[in-house]
Length: 271
Image (cartoon, rainbow, N blue to C red):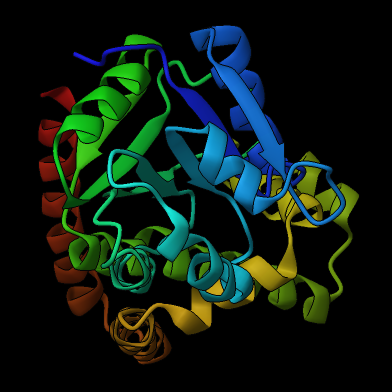
């Protein structure tokens, strides 16, 4: 149990996810929140002085420089976490620059975007690093408002994100470019789309609202991404050759193998 209700400081609080967590922590949780950003009156020193909890919500390209300035100033009894999409380098960076203060450190990845109205039913990855007192508080706050939290090692998180994010974005971008090259009429495509393909098109269309810099970082900064993409493209090429060669038996065998994987996913999702 905490001795008092903590004040939360969000570094990068004017960004979209920073604003989302400001609203969530103020309105849904009832905490006092201070915002620090490039053009705010509140500076990093104010955050360190007045906040027991510090959330860093900045672009990954700026992350190390922010933590390099912030980390050594953190108080020993305070809590530092981040909202980055990758965790291995980010957690190591927070640990490295807080060696003197020995504040508690946890990596946080909200597996949703700022367009969501609520955290209810949304997944959040939590990567423990140093300390447990604030970790239990933070996970408890998220779960109390309906978040589905999952505690995972930072490297295992990034390995999984190579499939969840990097490959997913790779497929969407490839689909978009393929449609563009073909020149097919989009109205006709929508009029004849199956429900599953329409969902894919809607997801592709949502890329228009996303930050290409973030997506580039997710693709190029995850050390596990290239291996996932290599495995995927290898199987895509094999499947293309099966279809090109009109090898019906091999296609059916491959389809049955994927069906079995699908059954396993169904079983897992029921638990």
